[in-house]
Length: 161
Image (cartoon, rainbow, N blue to C red):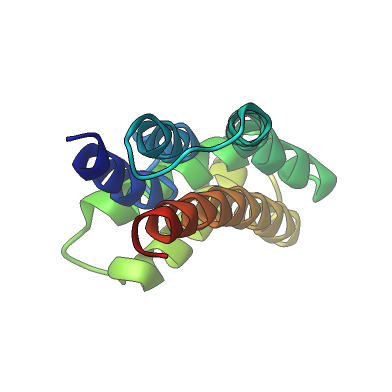
């Protein structure tokens, strides 16, 4: 049961790295913990502690990095909010525009741009700030995905190697 739940949590962790409603790194860490509690693997306390700290740090960074990147590019909170709304739109899907992986890249950028334009930025400044929000989003998503894949590799390694 623990092994099956661990595998489910690995998949949920990868999905949660992209879907904002699911906490990808904590789910991935729970997969590591459950595989540790099963007869399939035994991790050291140091490994479990370090991976828990990494999951917590990445989760916090996921909220901080887009704001820092947007501000660094001259943007506002409206750009970050628009980026998040764009991500939600990409997940829900619209009858027009790109969907799937292309939508996850396209809609957050468009959302950040619209947010900046609504906040009163001129077009060139809004585009620059939207680019910053988008880069921050990609960085946070990349960190979460890297951690989820790291945890998944460890779970698979312990099960099959």
